Length: 111
Length: 115
Image (cartoon, rainbow over all chains, first blue to last red; front, side):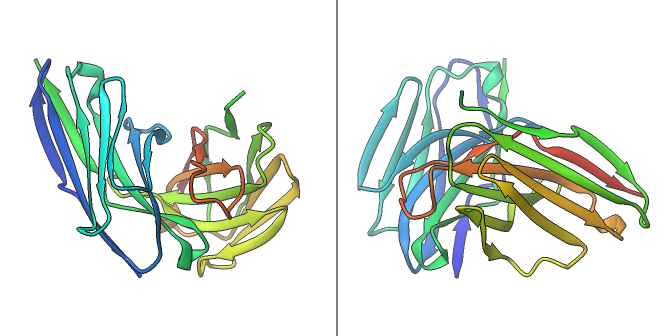
């Protein structure tokens, strides 16, 4: 099975940096995805990690440590529009390569 | 075109009604998915189609019936639903299910209310 944990809620200030953590336990790890989801809208893809290390994409970076079962999403220069839920999802090849989502972290950016 | 479209956007139905949700993509993706998402919860996988064949059925009740008429279209037929089935139904697609690197693209969802 899969067990994916994220903090439920976080609050950060506009212009600041925030780190959203995700820990996972899965038998057939085959990649980790981060998605952003605004309330009532579809999840949109942010990043993908399959090897250890940091992937940077503009204001967003994602880190993976497979040995620790750990990932984080780093958001820099926060903007009000970054207020959303951030979903960590693990692809499990023993689960037909399907995505298994964590509960999501609701980020609120305040002025 | 990296868009997945879903219709209708909103649907209200009674417990005795029959309705269908529709999903379409023109990215040439060969895997399509149905997810159910309750408020403040993550998406839960319902069905996976790979090359127009049902690959995964995650123990979904028979009142939900998926159909994949062709590689671009995915339907979800609804019959005799319960109020607890009220949720956001998301469709997604990806290149295929064999490669781990392919992300899933999600549609905007259908907000379903069962009265």
